[in-house]
Length: 565
Image (cartoon, rainbow, N blue to C red; front, top):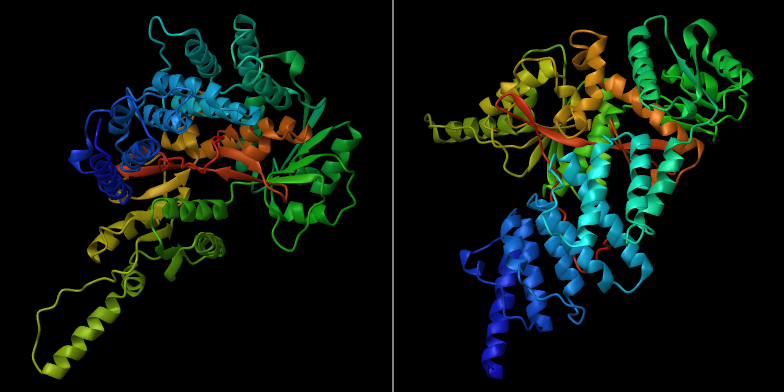
């Protein structure tokens, strides 16, 4: 047994080492064997701090090794926290079975039913993340029945390919095979109720789109995505009757009223902002509806009408959120000089400052130009640097060697630009001494039909999951049947139409699932208090001219965090 003073000294040294870890430094000296089987409170807390710090440093395998072999029995007060950390490390190391096993062991240690339910939900969510990342859910031979059952449940979810109808059947079949599994009467029962709400459609759905006129091509792509999702159900008996109306031929108000007279229980559309403005002033029958755009202020839509859009403002907000999560606190903004560009700048500024960040400079550029040097020099304060050089030469009366220096008080640049503009702006940023400045952009910078985007290397951008390699490529591949380059040309609108169809039962049944979010082709979807469908996007980065998926920053739970995430 250690003498008290010796043990105290070791504990203080351990806590000091943990403080270094939490500051972001992980010295090699901390890579040591697991501690002896008897843990006291300070040692367990220190071990937990070390593991979380390793996770924050991106060293998930080291964190997992640090926690391997540590005793985590029912009498250990830190066992639940240590098992949660072990699960985080295992999933981050792409070892889902070890993560599932840790959370399965954690469940009996939780006293409250709500805590156990949250632990099961957390386990399910982590498996879904592994599936989305393409990690196979393999069960080793001789695995205990509880974690083996969880892994089989995950494989049933993977086999559904994102189809809620197939997943609903898979969950029911799994429960029949595992009636005594802890998840059978807990999580699976809850999931079945959620997926019933996701798959029970109204009897008749009307789709209102401008299928003639100047928006015909866009409306046709949305319609095709909507109908593809309708046909993908695979069960004719569960499909609603579907009627489609042309808002150009009929007018939006007349199309809406005709759909109601023909028996529509739910209406999807119209698509254009001016059509929404017209409906806002009409005396409409109160049929649940999903508008395929956001109404501009001060237009107020009826309370029975939800709003869903591919809004660029959402992407600007996503850029602010992601940059802040990546540790950046001071921003610059460069956006095209259009109404949309200014709206994105406003959304970015509002979101970033609300999080606690600061926008130190913003400017607009002419999207018709080919040289953006003046705007970049002004934003980076290179003009001021040159002016200081000129003043100093004037004072000294002789020429001085001079190397321009950009401002050093910013962490990143928010860029709202199209591919043609971005391909010019990025090299000009490098030319003006800002090659090391991180750039966060919106989806408009990515042209999927372009062979190479090498000039955009390093730029991060928010987009739909399947566009950056994080979604279900098999589902979207069906749209290639619409012709050469169909997916590159209209894929975002196909996905928009498909997700609109999937939202119908959730909105019609007022499902609580949407409060927490559901996975869609356009992002993770949820409805806010105002009735707007918000999208949580994925992120890509240009590397060697190609797009690579960039996962979100690893979120390590603290002792005070809820285990529900």
